[in-house]
Length: 223
Length: 262
Length: 65
Image (cartoon, rainbow over all chains, first blue to last red; front, side, top):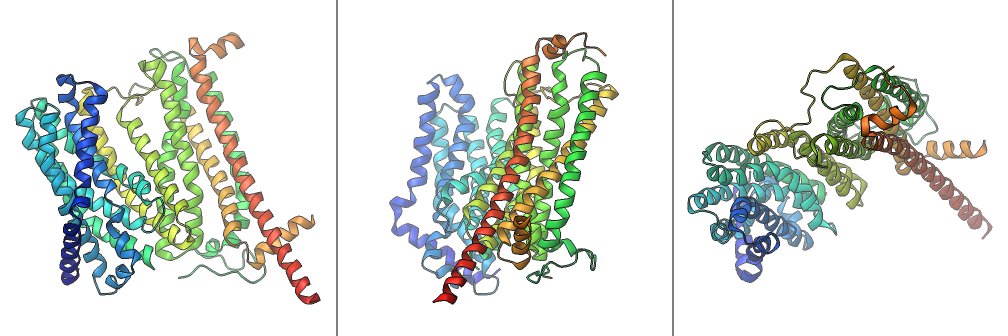
């Protein structure tokens, strides 16, 4: 992997996001609004909310991550800089990894920070909040990595947004199950460590497997 | 290694039989034309045999009465949906690594049939579940995995349909199918995990109970029927796709002209 | 043979609706699919014939002018 390209792309994406700070915060806003719909739809009964809270938070994080995916490569592709970037040796992997890292820094990390607050809103007991936080800390990078594959595959397509959701969500289901299950396990009096370990294993697998897949998809889209 | 380009007039079918003879769309077209009806007939024969055994030889189930007979089509369709997904991913991968467009065509031909079997598996599962378990849908590991498999099929079909450039669509679809097939065990494992967590003991629709041998025979016969059917339909669809893509070659035009003359 | 009459067979122990809906969908869908595939095949053939005819007409017009 081309380290120089990684650093360059990562820094550039962060700088661009900083210049459009309000836009960068939209996924978090979506996250909060979407999760708040559930009590309105389901009723304010704290018992019910407590049970559905981990799942709701996780699903909304998933959707928020997916919705901020389409622009990942689109801007660079539109002005031709993506093709230039991919010319350097080992650049494909670097670009894929850098984009996923930038996406997580910009969109994923804020979700992780906002999650405990949402948990409180949904009546999650205090001892579950750290577990929820940990599960999203491990899980949101998975979403950024998987989303990168989807964004690369659908590069330049009209309906890329919906396609990414359709393609990536099934692949993200194991992360959802282990992530939401971790907090729910605490609620049931069990240890969350098997869930978190499995989530960690998924993260490692994605760190290894997703960037090459994204790089291959970029090459397919660009050639 | 490139697929044999047959822009010359119709090549002899058995001039030199190699591993790549049927990588040529023209050769495949003719082979599929012969095999499809044969497989179709085999499918009908197996189906009739299986249905006969299932309805007239297999006894009434002690617990579920007569409605259990739905498994004779539920299990084969669910099984086929999984097999076809793996086959689709395999052929897409072959197309990608060997740069063989016939393999890509075959993968694309498999997808709708696989999706259809998934839908049938889910639908027959629901029809079995309603009288047996009281609800139209049961979130057990098998049915939930089937549902996710349907999403994987739909994702593949949506992606290749959304990309206008055939080459790019083929390769993107292949990548997605490979990613999908690698993930299927992970997804299945996580769903089983999820299911045991939330529902404790088995509310599974698996035929855990001991099955009398006529029941197994009926399921096997209908599975073979679905296999043969899948071959027949995939061959049919692949022939159509070959004509769609190779329509400007001399062999295709000669073929159509011949047919019109008759 | 365990069915003593046709109506008993159709009734399927009171669950005839479920059983026959399942088998009915099975048959209907697996008949519809090959028909759709054949339709697609025929459409492809027609498209080729039309393109060939168009080219022929264009060539003839080119020769004339």
